Image (tube, rainbow, N blue to C red; front, side, top):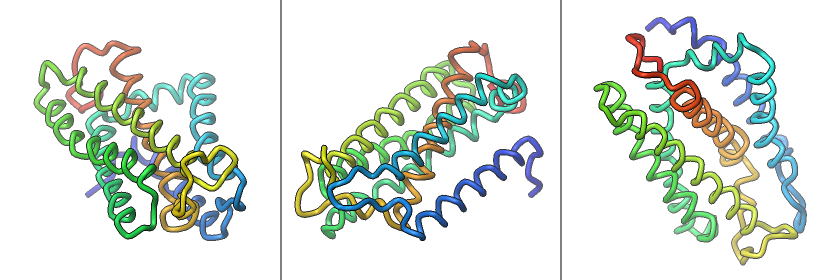
Length: 212
């Protein structure tokens, strides 16, 4: 199947981003010493979002490109959040603490299950599609607030007040490091773009090409 030309730049960025995250993760870049904040991991989360904000604010062409992305595709991507349920599985094997696994795993699972229903509303042009996109994005962003916060508080660092015999250090090493260093900021940006498309620009209805 031929890839739509509009998606090509985004796909290239995603591939490079994911590859860089994997290479750095394999080299131990995101691992922090006991008792220290995971600074590299936090930077990998914040920097892409900051760069997006700068590009969006400073480039009209970039804004047009971003707002021209297919809202159905952006919403469907959130369905992959269902993989967050594995945090609960890892908790059962005593590899992750419950203080992190419960909010992260349950939140991701809810968002992942809800996403296909929102896609369906978009495809059918349900009167509630706009509200459902907003709700999905709010739920998804709140999930990340809980996951990131609990991940830090349950880690071996100066503010790790929830740290116990099992910490969140596993999230700093491959393969799980790909989630906080690539998956989380990428999904945050997808939520952000979706909210921009349905709130700031008040699009009255979906276009025939699926954009909104």
